[in-house]
Length: 72
Image (cartoon, rainbow, N blue to C red; front, side, top):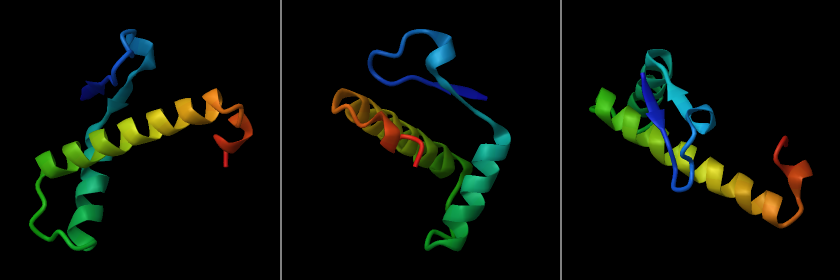
């Protein structure tokens, strides 16, 4: 399993713990959606990119006072 931290995230409880199940599911997704030769490393990179994006969007929503949008 791999912990992913983004920028100012320095405490372990703030990170996302990527599991083998996450990687396997993402790999299957990639292979069935236009990337038939995707590898586990590709899946890991994909998850890292999506996690960082989601984290930044959540911070932007909080900053803009739109916290009700986070749960949608």
